[in-house]
Image (cartoon, rainbow, N blue to C red; front, side, top):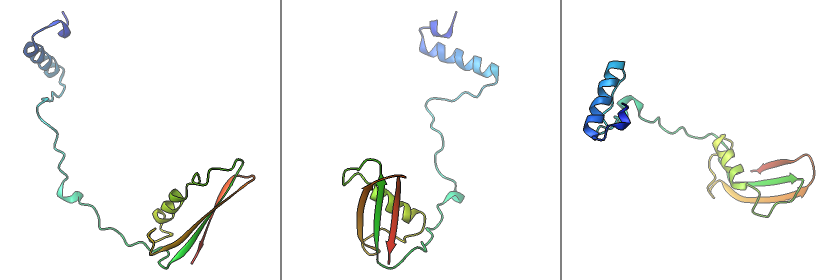
Length: 118
């Protein structure tokens, strides 16, 4: 006889617990949730002030590709977010980024050239 053959849910549950206990396995009650509360020592650290360019600047993104992309197909937002994430730019708000230019041309090798003018 297999546990799956027992139709009574309570009996099946008791048998499964007994087998697990005998095997030394840890039995988890389905009605209890794990403790998801963070420990006091796991508080987030204070945000570190970025040291990137902190004056208004213009960003030029030039893409060289085998095939030209749609005018909105160049991932300018991803490029700018990468500059902020790496600490090159302090922020991508209008206070720090006055203008963004996109250009593209056909050619090889494929590359993206990002220029920052302060």
